[in-house]
Length: 318
Image (cartoon, rainbow, N blue to C red; front, side):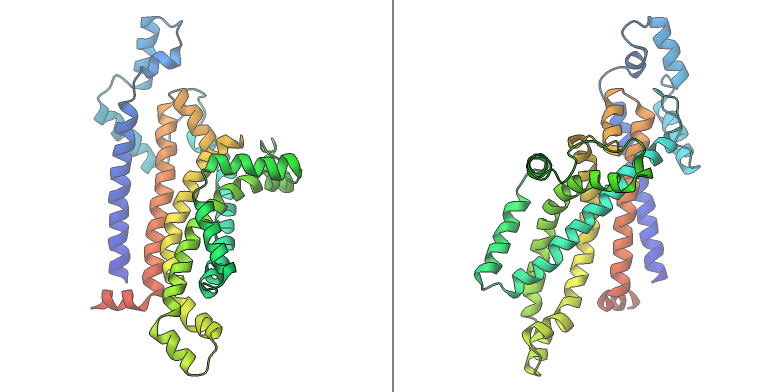
């Protein structure tokens, strides 16, 4: 197991390094002169050149990359070239919106996918089971923007239950108001991603119901439901854990997108604004942090899967 964890840590470090190179290179090939954008249309050529030198943009790209990645490894993300503030402090401030939104969305995914997926499989031959399955297909096909607008129309405009836009200026100092402002965005992402996970849970549960060990449990006098709960669902859980890593990554990306729709001051809103202002140090650091979170979640899922699945543990010991 130790060898497996060390191997995964090595792959994680390699993937992180490759991602950092791709992020840096991609942002450098964007059209437009960063110094000219920051200096504005009224800046003279001399002022633009001075700004370029101040930002280090006239140095070789390799030297710029080494300086940036060296700072990241020392937990120094640098300063914004637009506001002059520390990037790490701005990321921490915006993450207070994005991280809770992602966690709430994941809770919605689990609440939707697990019980309904098992129910639809268990009642697969009934009209209600087929109706639940068809509803999940419909929900997974709905675009995020359209789902957000529909939710705003029903839950905010018609019923008046939830705010449709914004986040309290004093943030989590008013926890109830902050929580309410994230409910509608979390439902928007969570219901769509939950419909995707639902299909996996339903398929895995159907396979579990036909598995030999579940049939054996039923032949020993257990009811179909009891055999499923005691013998079938533990195997379903292993499939779900693998999928949850991908779902968490999708939720984080979805949260970045949906923040624009609901005017939430999170990482997504900040990222779009920074791209428009060509604040490259801030954009590349934000992208690298988000990529790091996704890579770490994937590695943790692999390790957890290895720990709880005896078949994988046995393969590793051979």
